[in-house]
Image (cartoon, rainbow, N blue to C red):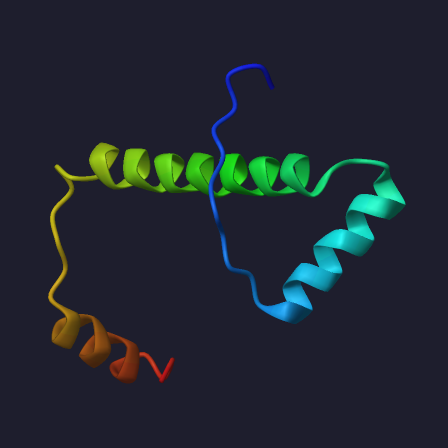
Length: 76
């Protein structure tokens, strides 16, 4: 991590304890685990945004009509 940046992060005490235990068990640093978790979270956000973009041209459904149809078909 030659170009790593330092940041102050305040963690919930239980979360901090859990990540320290996991770091010890996996022989990885807390920083490695937090960086991995942040990368994964950001990647999931990017996937979600792409899914929204790819479906932006689809027609939208009226919520009330969907509910009415579900009730009519006995699904609600």
